[in-house]
Image 1: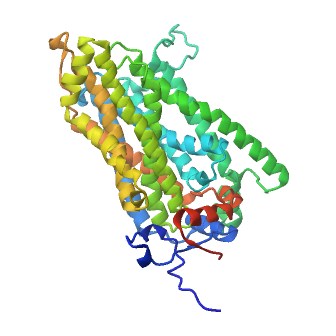
Image 2 (image 1 turned 45 degrees about the vertical axis):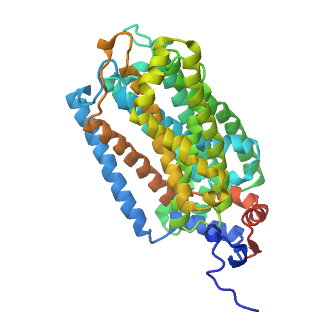
Image 3 (image 1 turned 180 degrees about the horizontal axis):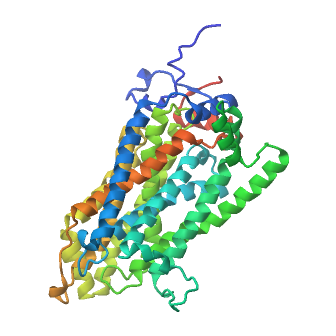
Length: 477
């Protein structure tokens, strides 16, 4: 039997981009098997030698997280005056960061729940760390409202608990709606993530060598034996949680948009905000999934599991939601003109159009993503990763532009005060990324970052689709 060069079998199909089809080398895409999927994924959690790159990234993220908590201590002992918030811009960076991180968490539930209900099998390779991303993003989001209330140690007053002060929250306030919406979303997302991981945790338990690992994974696996009875209960619970999480994807960011939409601030009180915010959350969330997926598949050797087909599908979803966002930007200007309200028109045509954050938002969210119309750019992982990073930057600036609307009041010019973030504002934003990546790196190191049971369930049909999508030849290992 003729030997096959091992390098040829590596599924680096995205590098086959020569202009002349005659000059392209024939592609052979290695087929994942039950054994290879199990070994590749469990090796990440049980490996004896962790890659140096993981240690470097983890050290940087832990340092940023520690810096964030030091800044929170500084805030508590000094007061919220260390922020750049003023009147009328009383929300500032904290609410921008809150909306940004809540939006990042939407893609995980969308990939896991909605695409699961629609039986989109391509989700199985990326849903696990997208779910984890949701949990950690919501953690970062919940941090900012808690420290923005001024007296953070009294944040529990937001909950309607029985108390001797006869004090109840204002249930007509959308800020209180956020408390219930985000906490419910975080709870359901965490349950959905954990229940889906139980079969894979049992696999880690059975393959672990160390006694501590066996006990830890054994407790987490809840006695899973893989029996028919267990699988039947598991599938019912997973389907129930997916159905429960699906409306939350639409409701949570709609509730977040009500923070702005029910006000009378020019540029805010508009009915397009709920669908506009939901589309923006999916847009930024999928971009973050790509930002995480491309380095992970490269660093941990998962190119045959997270294939170019998965990246291409996510890029198409980004393109579709990006067009919705572009329409929302345009309709905002149209409604301001159509209303013939002097304050609305002044906000959009005399203030927002002449601010540099607005054009950063347009460039990152509207202009650069148009490259995704072309498959050659969708198949180049470097270009796709840069576009995804740009979208995340643009989505943060989108929320920043919305908050900047507060600083401009044409009717009473004396009420207009420019907002200027301080070093504490910027440092807390950077530190929140440290918090996010610290937990994400711990996840990819000690837990199964790919849903092994779900990936195995669709083999070999998924491999045939990968080969069809990339034009590669099949190789059955």
